[in-house]
Length: 351
Ligand SMILES: Cc1cc2nc3c(=O)[nH]c(=O)nc-3n(C[C@H](O)[C@H](O)[C@H](O)COP(=O)(O)OP(=O)(O)OC[C@H]3O[C@@H](n4cnc5c(N)ncnc54)[C@H](O)[C@@H]3O)c2cc1C
Image (cartoon, rainbow, N blue to C red; front, side, top):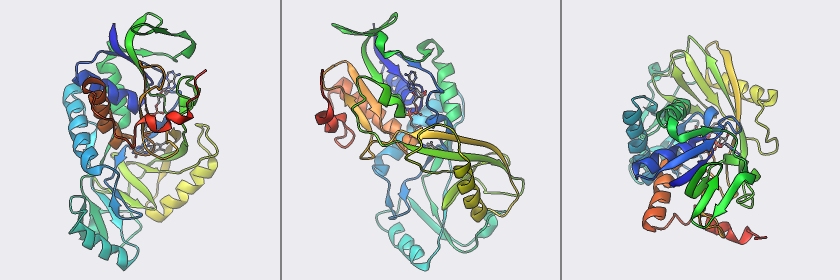
């Protein structure tokens, strides 16, 4: 009997798989990667700073060191590169923004706010001049490479299929799904948690996002991510990702003309160089109603767990909360109370 069945095949499921392996917990992943494409289309950026309020991102001081050690450990293990440390360039619109940046970079945000610069030779083909701040300890994960390589590395542990909830049997010592017996099951279906009969009471507020991949020969970002109304970053030579949109009503995974227009208009404010669109993709971010992860044990079925609600920040949050979950499971440590599914128990109605 294995320790865990993991349902899903996005960032949550894959990060959990590595974390379980690191703690000698056995697992099988049962997932179909294309039912929900959020992890596949994500830009994969992590940013320790919230620009709107110029504060640090939630738990950044804890999540970022773990993010670096987790993904670089996976790189070594799988012998592939997908972790890229890249400063984020934040142009200043007003003098006051610069003043606040300088002030906070000497105090509470000294770890994350870097130098102010006016050196525009770093960038070519971009539509701004003037001063900007450089974010430290930021970067991106090539999520496609991470997911594909994980699936190859653990190929014996991956079953690629749609999970059929009606076939799950609850047994005295755990669960059984087809011929897989496990002590526990953990569900990581992203926004498709709404189809899960055991956890569909968890209140979600998913947000659709669309993103463009473009090619531009005249654009040079010098390994930086530019953020000005939208972000743009180079993923390979002359190929860039730019985005992203937010939409809460249309929750289909289809790219729309409306979002393409919005992204093209933003892009034209960001860059001056010619470009062609190579790809236009959409995905649904699995955000919870209070925008915190949703992790922990089912109120009635002791062997059932959930790992969801990664929202807009899956790259940064997943390694930290996977570790938090394993320590909760193995050593009875507390789950972070803001992320514990317990906060929604009152919404669960047992039959
Ligand atoms: C346009 C866009 C840009 C983004 N940019 C960033 C970014 O820069 N940085 C960042 O940190 N985050 C970003 N995100 C958010 C990020 O994608 C999510 O936080 C994260 O990927 C969520 O991972 P997940 O595994 O919880 O969900 P998902 O990626 O939705 O994965 C769920 C998985 O479960 C599978 N599944 C569901 N139901 C079943 C079933 N019944 N049977 C089998 N399999 C099933 C799905 O097919 C899928 O593989 C972005 C998202 C979008 C849409």
